[in-house]
Image 1 (cartoon, rainbow, N blue to C red):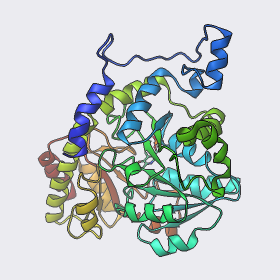
Image 2: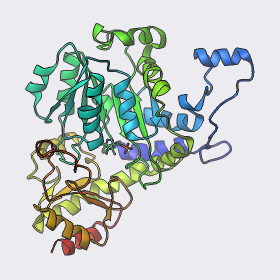
Image 3: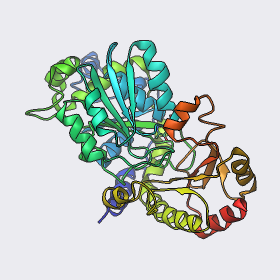
Image 4: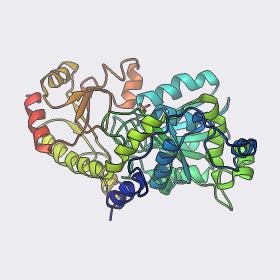
Length: 411
Ligand SMILES: *Cc1c(COP(=O)(O)O)cnc(C)c1O
């Protein structure tokens, strides 16, 4: 039984309630009252589990957080205002001036800009590597390395990492591993594979219909006995490990990031995200099947398709062995020139042109003139952004309709 089947049961059961309102309640209050001063004291000390103030969370977010944590085999989760909010929360709760990040794989544009432009302003340096640069990655780890950051699927380069090998390197050197699993929720279990924190943009396939911006960070439990995070490299974490024990990573993230930066999700967005989450397994399993049909057919019709399900892809074997539930909704078409790519986008009748991914509808976008327009040529080459590259996010349409439309648009 794959994750999709298991979660078909879990999600619908967890989102709906069997007592009272079936649909989750939207608790949009910004503040929460405490019935007695003793209760206020207890809430602030953490001994009473009730909402403190909405920046630190609310009951609708909590519902989403507990389901996301269970989905990912984490101990707890924090819902955030966006995917970048989740990445910022995870990263800023760990790094200080002088620290270094090792970033692996073709990165989402926002994350790349955060690491290459914003973090250096605060004295945090990032090193960027291709997914298979394992020896170089090991050589670069030093005592200042605090995070190895990895995307489960290169977006848009479509490279697949060997997550087990990268997690083994992180463990061997005692470095924390963050995986951005936005493209492949349920398809791969990042924390089981060795991630310490997994981050999501729930805006994408988790909400699934462009109705809500959101994100989520899921944290693993700190082990009772030995744990790589109980080392001097993570000195700042030790007091949280003493106090919050297995919940140390989340306690640290709440104090060091959520409280001070305020990237909290709002209840309305969390509600909409819960509605999406409920049908995620159904949608993802359909998209994973459709994308294999569409990429195989378009490729046979002479289009230059980048997707790991094709035997010509450099990570096809990894796709078969490590990504048995597919690798999400993305594939790319290289039209070689911007003119040809624009012609295709002007002729397609089904694709919606937008910067989003993971929607019910099939989406498409020319990469070099939009998301990556501010990047220099060397960076674009590293990220795999060629002049005629179009990124497609497969939707829920009949795959045959997409094939027909894309073939007429490319002629
Ligand atoms: C979209 C995306 C993000 C950022 O998420 P937002 O919700 O837009 O802030 C981060 N990582 C990946 C892989 C994404 O696709």
